Amino acid sequence: MHIPSPSVSGFHLGPLYIHYYGLMYVIGITLAILITQRRWKAVGGDPSLVGDVALWAVPAGIIGGRIYFDITTPKYIPHHWYGIFAVWDGGLGIWGGIALGAAVGIWRVRRHGANAAQFADAVAPALLVAQAIGRIGNYFNKELFGGPTSLPWGLYIPPSYRPPGYLSYTTFQPTFLYELIFDLGLAAALVWLGHHRGIKPPGLFALYVTGYSAFRIFEESLRVDPSEHFLGLRLNMYVAIVLTVFGAVWFWRSQRRDQAPATAGGPPAGAEEPQASTAAEATEEGSGDEPAAGQEMPAEVGADRGSAAAETPAAAESADHTN
Image: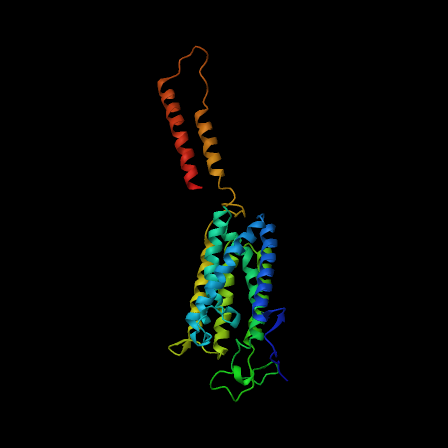
């Protein structure tokens, strides 16, 4: 008893050959956009912003993912002149894709004047769903599997896809399936935390980085596909450890920081209040008892009022700079 490998990696649509790997990524990205639009709208954001961000961030993510793959797994690059670009032949490093995609996405969000931290929290569970769907593509490519196993859910790998030193084994750990299940579970947990706990933005995104990277430490300990090694460990193992620590520290710092509740369309809510209170206080300070008709105002009072009048614009200007 085992999980069989698919006999094909795609299908013909007229003169085109559609790879399941690429199709799964298209489905995953589409679901991520729809989920993010729903979550962003729920916090008061403009759903159309999600489409604009995706238009820029998705291509950037594909480029970043391929660059990361080419650097960390050069043995998997197809032996063609276009091999480094052949994303349809497998090979998108998730961390490279998230890094470049997030950088471009933040640029677009800030360009629209929206809250980047809250947008990151809206997109975090959606990214995990997209990653889970993408792992189905790994199944069709017969890749992303672990070491030999006799477990009932072991994945049969044809001889031509087995790495050197493992030709005599038939079934392997389906690490793509483990990650698929974990991604969906973590996505559900982030949604639950967002609804039932007062997580300050970008706390959910920090937990996404922490949780996914921590799982990758486990996954990398099982995988046997070719990868660059350093001091006996896969390069991705070091990346996973560093990002797990980074994500945990990022989450801790984001929750300790004292900040006003964020609004989706701009800076934290209440940011304009200090300016209003400054003006009110200036009015109160300047509102004394008026002298009776014909009574002369004392010189020191006139001087104080003149000083307050001169300071009020400066106070307002100062409030503008602190928003």
